[in-house]
Amino acid sequence: MKVLVIGGGGREHIIVKKLKLSKRVTEIFAAPGNGGIAQDATCVPIKDDAIEELVAFAQKEEIDWTIVGPEVPLTKGVVDAFQEKNLKVFGPKKEAALIEGSKDFAKAFMKQYDIPTAKYQTFTDVEKAKAYVQQEGAPIVIKADGLAAGKGVVVAMKEQQALDAVDNMLTDNKFGEAGSRVVIEEYLEGKEFSLFALVDGENVYPMVPARDHKRAYDNDEGPNTGGMGAFSPVPDLDPKLVEFTVEKILKPVAKGMKKEGRRYTGVLYGGLIETKEGPKVIEFNARFGDPETQVVLPLLENDLIQVIEDVTAGKDPQFQWKNGYAIGTVVASKGYPGSYAKNVVLPDLKANDQVYVIHAGTGQSQDGSFYSTGGRVLLVGSIQDSPEQAQKEIYQYLKRFDQNDDFFYRKDIGFSKE
Image (cartoon, rainbow, N blue to C red; front, side, top):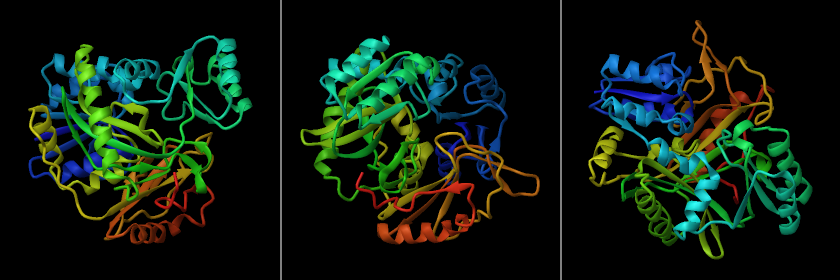
């Protein structure tokens, strides 16, 4: 079986690594891939949102399955384009991917179907948005309506910070079209967790929960990022809350989307928070989350391609999970999530028996060395019997970055009270 993975980040690298373990998969392509993915698959120089080129490639190579990693091609209709040519592809169609593509759509949808989430209002007018902030007070959350690579959310602890965020999005156009409309919502207090489910129509198959660390620095300080690390499972998460999330959040979403004529197939990601009233939705993503995928998929015993075939055939994939804890710590370029240098040479990245290395923003030179191409450069993960042992192995490995000022990583992944 030939498989194409669309994307070039850490999430796509772990998907490729899982596919490599399948006895049924003979060839893997990644478009565009990255330096690390090139060790495990054939990288194709096609951008992840160059839809016509991707379709033409899949036809020419007679690809059996395509798995879509990132959100941008999904919201641009890559699945629709593949299906029009009778190509098998795993991911939601454009109309269903709107649950991630527009926060305003997602909030209105949740309101319609009684799915627990923070109260909110949507604005395009700067003065009205600011008046609402002043009326509600801080802490408060300001979100760009559209896709902003995980950076379009400001959790404002002070009113002025919220007013600045409104200006950044609506006046200064910081996020372009994505921020031409803002969703302002109440600040929710509690511990966050992520839950992926594979969905087909009304069938929902939840995976093992994870928790990621969004803030750039130790002790959950600094700006929000796309995620600085993650762990799975979540020891302090009551199984009843997971059950509630599946029954009262994920299943109603699948049912509601079908009712709206937006039948959902693919990965549904719930970004959730435990509040005093029970779990509430912070956001939905229409694909595997990054970096949580890099700790959830390594725990999965099943053959990933078999899982996808089962789900799309309406069969329960019967998930089997490894016993143990997976933790992953991200190494980022100095300055991330702001501006940062690229093309910085990385130290030797040879993995050992105790850790795995997932590339996110890397390229490879002709001499075999790797260099940075992005803000989040790589993730070092480990599966062990206890979180403490996993942390020990990861931080032992990461010492190779300690003499290098060009990169940084959090030293408390897996310890966070988040």
